[in-house]
Image 1: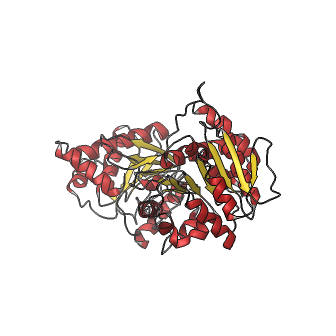
Image 2: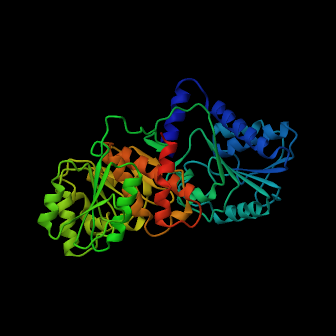
Image 3: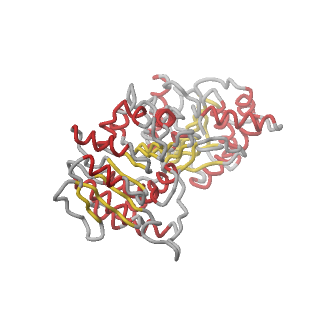
Amino acid sequence: MTAAEMQLAEQALIAKGISVEQLMRQAGQGAAQMIWRVSADLPTLVLCGPGNNGGDGYVIAQWLREKGVDVRVAAPLEPKTPAAQQAKSRWAGDTISLADAVPAPQFVDCLFGTGLARAVGDDWFAHFSRLFDAAKRRVAIDLPSGIESDTGILLNRVKKFDITIGLGAYKPSHFLEPARSLMGDLVGIDIGVAAGSDLRILPEPRLSAPGSHDHKYSRGLVAVVAGAMPGAAQLTAMAAQKSGAGYVKIFGSAGLEAPHPSIVVETVDNIGALQQKLSDNRISAVVIGPGLGRDDHARELLTTALAVEVPLLLDADALVIAGTQFGDLLQNRNAETIATPHAGEFAGLVSGGLQNKLADSRNLANQSGCTILLKGSDSVIVRPDGQACISAQSCPWLSTAGTGDILAGVIASRLAIGASGYKAACEGQWLHSRAAQLAGPAFTPEILIDHIPAALQECL
């Protein structure tokens, strides 16, 4: 949930008769129990801010104290909210200033949580950092202080925690970079709030194997339009085939060789030839962009593909060519369309560049009527109505040339069997990430492709 959604969810509970103090007690005690399970009686310093996150800290400190833990509390200010004030009134120990605090083996950050919109002041953060650096174990409650909850943006120079305990619901920044890399182990504490968000964590897909009635066309014919650098299109075609497409074709210039005997290559020497090839009503999905090039001929190829009312995936050079005219180019399309930009390509699609991964992706999807998959270690997938998911899977070995071309092929195979653009993008993203995990370190694109069937098998 975003900060605003979380506030609404809490207000809904309060309207049912649950007080803020009860919610705080439930959240704080749940977090304290998690800390106790992980580190038992490790001497602990809890930093409590003036808001409700600080109130959670007083509850945590008292619960641990009653367990016999050596707990100290440091706070820069007195609590400002009634619930936090009540929580402090139940704290039986002393409270010292940040400046007077001495380090402890365990550091618990309850300074600021969800809703922080500006940097923590330099003086406070200097003491925060001093105490953090001297600890052996660092725990963040809800979010590390200095992180904007809805975007993952760092408002301060936040360092990596050992564990982050989310309260009530996960926040976007738990899964968005650069914040995600600083969370350490992420766990959640349920305080009874009901889901009220269009944002989800990317789930493992549940797929079906072909039935006895299926044939190559019912399993989907994927057509890949090749351009100036046909190797990228070949990788896309190989990935589509390994992901379950029943039939894969590449449309390219004379002399283009098939990457495998079972993949058909058909020559298109001019735009008229491509128009004719794409008019085949057996084609289930078209991919254009990988290795397309950016010259006038590439623009003509893209214009031709956009005019065909077949589910279409746009990647790489197709997105660079489209630029800020992206939304206009898609205005007349009725068939499912997916765009898979990385951050650099996305910045070229929108005026002002990429500022907020989630909000900007939602805006572009809404304006273009296209499913957007913003690629990265924290891939965001958004459909035009705003429903979105963030991939919690990551594999740093995917940071190599060719893996994006493979993702395009995997998604196209799902699109070709009739899945919606959003569903195809979600399924393809999960399979791609899982194949990378199965492939191990330092894989080539070809090795990644070979591990797609194993990822697929896990979902059947």
